[in-house]
Every structure is written in C-alpha cells, then in structure tokens.
Image 1: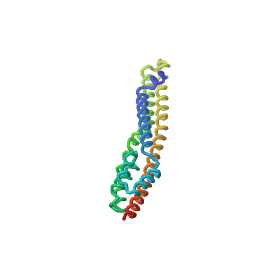
Image 2: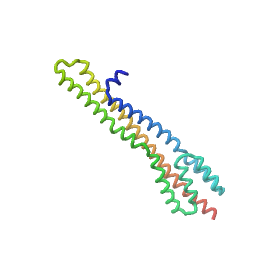
Image 3: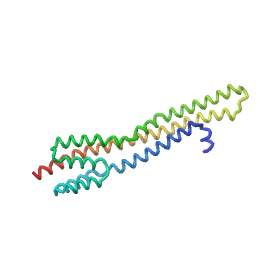
Image 4: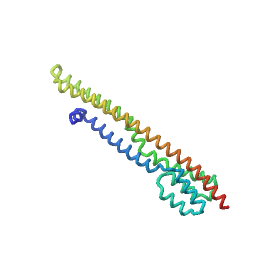
Amino acid sequence: MVKVLTAGGPMLWLLLAASGTAVAVFVERVLHYHRAQINSMEFLNGVRNVLKRENVVEALSICDATPGPVARLVKVAILNRERGREGLRSALEEAGLTEVPPLEEKLNLLATIAQIAPLMGLLGTTLGMVKVFSTLQVENLFASREILMGGIWQSLICTAAGLALAIPAYAAYNYLVNRVNSIVLEMERAATEIINIVTDTARADS
C-alpha cells in the first residue's frame, strides 16, 4: 500500500484528500437528513389533537421539541393561523424557501468532487507520461527500467484513483439529492395538511 501511495505521485495525495472530503460530506449530510426526516403524519395527528383542545401553547411546544423542517413549517402555520387560508399558504411558501437551502448545503461540493476527480486522475496520468518521456529524452537508450516503470505506474494509479473516487461520489450525490427531494415533498404534503387542520380548527372555534 505504501508503495502504491509513493508511486502515485503528488496527484494521488490530492485525490485522497478529495476522497476524505467527500466521505465527510456524505456522512454529515446523511446524519442531517436522518434528523430532518420525521413521521409527519403521526406528528400532524398529534398537533391536530392538541389544537382541537385549543391548546396552542402545547402545539407550539411540540413543534419546538420536534427537529426538522416539517415541524418548523407547522409552527409557522400555527403562528399565522389568524391570516386565513391564503395568508397561511403565503407564509408557508416563504418559510419553505428558507428551509430548502440548508438541505442542499454542501451537495455542490460533492458534485464538484465527482466531476473533477477523473480530471485530476487524467492530470496525474499526464504527469506520469511526461516523467517517462523526459527520462527517455535525457537518458536516451540508457534509461533504467525502474525509472520508466515509475512513470507508467504513476499514470495507471492516478487514472484508477480518479475513477474510483468519481463513481461512488456521483452515486452518493444522487442518493443525497433524492433524500432532499423526499424531504421537500414531505414538507409540501405537511404544509397542505396543516393548512386544512388550522383552518378547520378556526372554523370550529367560530
């Protein structure tokens, strides 16, 4: 393993650093999405039952105690319950716009790593071939086999490392994008449901 790392040249170390960054971003985002995604129907049923008892303070406390964007949207709806259906929809749209960017945070970094990893590998390959040909130019026919093999090894290792990083990074990016889309869809469903809950409760009170 040490021999491979040494033979890969400086570009291999950059690829390893990019790989570590990609892993860190993926793990952090997975944990973040795990905390953000809740059983929204069960949560909304609990809020509905509390609001039916006209206990707004307890409903807000439930929202504060529940992590994730769905709970924050529900809290916005409760706080704006006097604005009517259109006012609620407008308030939830504004709140939703502020919730999406944190979900997409760092995804561009992962996508960038997936895109440039093959290019970094290609650069390492090119540097390896430059090393081979410069050696041939200087040493002519007397170039040692070890020096020539070192350049070829560098080329092959960098190519393989670039592809080995790009493929899982791209797959991880697509997986995280799907998780974001799932959470956003859940937010939209919850927003529609909480509008109905709040307006029905207000109608019952009047």
